[in-house]
Length: 292
Image 1 (cartoon, rainbow, N blue to C red):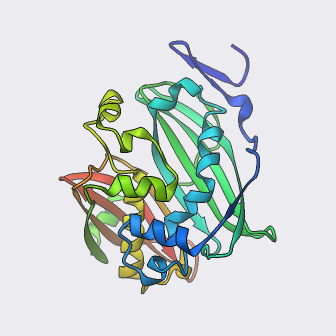
Image 2 (image 1 turned 90 degrees about the vertical axis):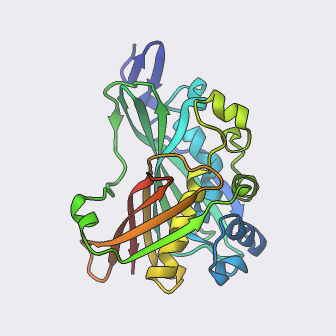
């Protein structure tokens, strides 16, 4: 085994690809695509529904086809069916709007293994046609029941919720319904064709109870809950949105998202910790949202 590689039971993670950018991809933003995404996530904010400004989690759509290849330049491609979305962290420099010509690229920055699964952290950036940053993203890909060993490189930024956060007075609590057909609407709107969200048999073969909601779709529900309850539905005020996906959410379930005020190191920034519960279990945890 060469330096920069980790192996377990014949599975090899290759660290030589860390820091290597994917090829740049371009994405033209339209009001119609924004509105389709908002409708697919049951977003109630008028400026999202009419395509005036993109919902926060729409930011993943332009980079989606870059993220998996970046992760699979470190993890073996044969582990694709063991891949689930572990964490997602957005840092927003400005909202996405119709007419934007976006340039995106991604790179793996670190990996680490544990007996119950291994993670690969991917960093992605989105710039406009002038080269200005629009947003930055950290995706943590989790490969179930694979141990990549010690690992190397960088971890994603921290956004853990604490017991002290939960002990505080809740700033807001929002309950929303995940529709029975949610995944079939979200898949084309997001460009995510993964069959575990569309085919019961394939989902069960992957060890799931059946079709599960896209994690990013559930995250989008929490994003509009935060904006409507904490920021007067003003997307331009959103600075950061981060979560860890703890349990899958099934179509037809309700989710309840609770927000607590938490500390911020930056003057003028309001920060909240949050969790989302479905069917008596925490589905999204280590949530953090920050507003200017």
